[in-house]
Length: 349
Image 1 (tube, one colour):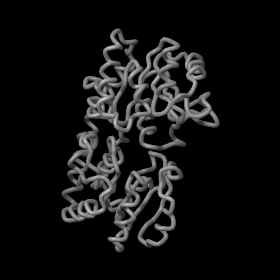
Image 2 (cartoon, one colour; image 1 turned 120 degrees about the horizontal axis):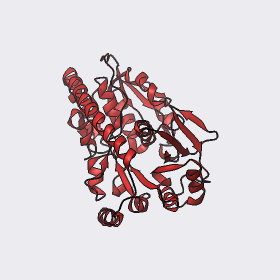
Image 3 (cartoon, one colour; image 1 turned 60 degrees about the horizontal axis):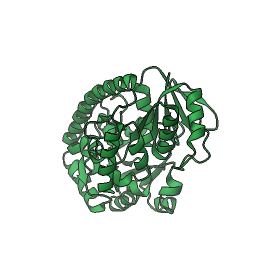
Image 4 (cartoon, helix red, strand yellow; image 1 turned 90 degrees about the horizontal axis):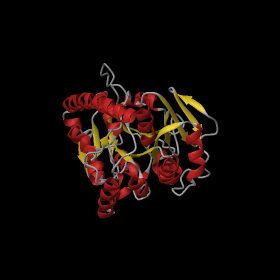
């Protein structure tokens, strides 16, 4: 019997935060595992079988669930975990087969209209923060904060760059370009995102070319992000919103402080070990940089200490999640859960 995840993209070819978190969650699960996703060829990634999904448009929330059900049956699926746009077709396919459906939720209801129906109809949901679980009406649901890579044993933070790990508008690329103008003597790194064609800014390359202290770098696989951390002095996350903020936690493992947008979800992650600011605020981001630089060593130590605490929590959550998946069965009172999720998500829409 196999645990199967269904998603529009998957590492190592699609290394966005949600997909990386899904892979790390799948890696925790014991037994046979597989992933259905958009790919030209089937492959094995870190012992997980990744297969081409029989869906024409993986971004269509109303995709036909029948081909997915056929693939799940061929894989002898026991549990199916859906994520993002394919969540509802995944849930409906699982229902047709009488197997357990789980939606992996990485967004609060306010930004989760596309998955709302799937979360309601699923047998279970697993949430990336306690705040999200509460907002969706399931305060006692399983919570698996996005797992991070192992902490480096030694802190060798000698980087000199202020780094943004995503070039998207909503991640604050405009803020970072403005900061680069304010600090012409500082080095800035902006890492390109694969979603840049649809969610970036149209003149990024032209604006960056006008700033000699800005470097545009390619996105790398999660296991190679350390190459950027080794060059980083402060991580910049001046986003419009973050539903957890995994990159700041990984940076903290290297003793790298962050200037980070403040949300209830972020406070469950890097929290007050970062300088928390309002969304897309150039002024507050600049102030955050100045605060960190005024006591860099102290902020570096606080970041590392927080990362160590989060690693201990992760170890406990990972064991709980693996046990949950190993014994999960169809719920006997699913209608109660559905009603709670429906009412909670309706209020926040």
